[in-house]
Image (cartoon, rainbow, N blue to C red):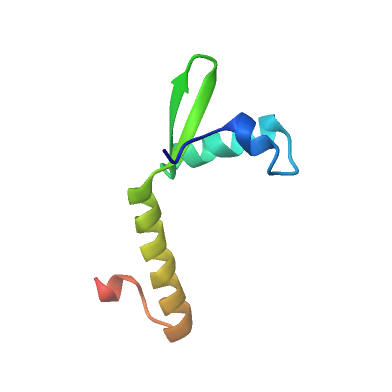
Length: 75
């Protein structure tokens, strides 16, 4: 379902569970990920709308850096 628990991520990274939780909290505050508590576990999933918006902004930034123009000029 595109969800993951911090306990599942811990084995994939070379950082501790509290560090992973902290970074997920920052991403949640920024709206990049969403979360749902189920009992003692919190499951996270990517906010696809925010990810698409971020992708567009990064694409615009790449254009600006390549062409030395403003993102606002293209809107």
